[in-house]
Image (cartoon, rainbow, N blue to C red):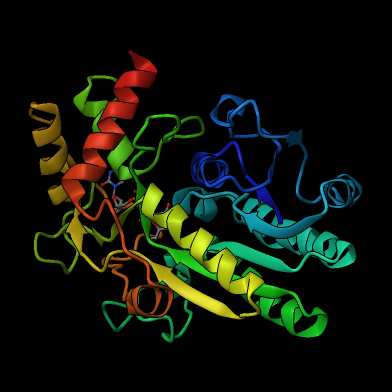
Length: 324
Ligand code: UFG
């Protein structure tokens, strides 16, 4: 079964390609290289530089490689940017995904796994938030992904495409063998920014400490990218076996504040981090923590890197390797 990975040169997509290749699966990688880096994809994996919305190119790739399943990671990923430039998000994440789905339906693809986000919940009332919570995104990023979840449900019902939407919480860390990690694009994510600051390569600030949380800074559920990708392989198998409409949170269920992350980075790097408190960042919910019982119980997901210090250590090792 050949699996097409979109956004394959990006952070999560490249880890998915590595894991699929490690598992001996047939994989074809596509990316438009607008943010991704070609060098993150192993040379032995077939790579096509293409936009997911390019119906004829994508259609040709699906047919040529007899693709049966798609892992769809391509998309724009910054909450703050989505507030400044919403049309980019509705274009890339919503319209782009609809075009990709049209190509998949036409080519008879059997399974489709979509990288959704915890941002579809907005600022949830129930924490840890279960998959059954109402979708109420508070920024265009979350809204653009929620629309694609709805599109998938409708397309799946109409065309018999087996689908899953995995709602990622805060993905961080790097491949344990340091073959990939966060690279390229605008640096906005907390762990990467804090690690770069600890290495003396970028300034750092805490975006607000007046939230209704134990230490006043935002609380998130950080999940190691390798554990996240493992969930995709499990779900792919479930879809191939006939399941569909699989909606799953991917997080550990552990709340970690911005200050907790700062302390972990200081510990890993053996340094003190200047962490002045700046204003809140628009679009940030105070707390997002996953209820991931469904993934653990129904899909046997057993994380291997469920520890903040492990995540931070791998992010630091990757950054050291990358930037010397
Ligand atoms: N933060 C700082 N300083 C920084 C960077 C971030 O204080 O330099 C804070 C943010 O304000 C936020 C927290 O750290 O409170 C986490 O921010 P990230 O940018 O690392 O992550 P987000 O929570 O904004 O977003 C991420 C993904 C989304 C996903 C979301 C779900 O980018 O795709 O997690 O929780 F939807």
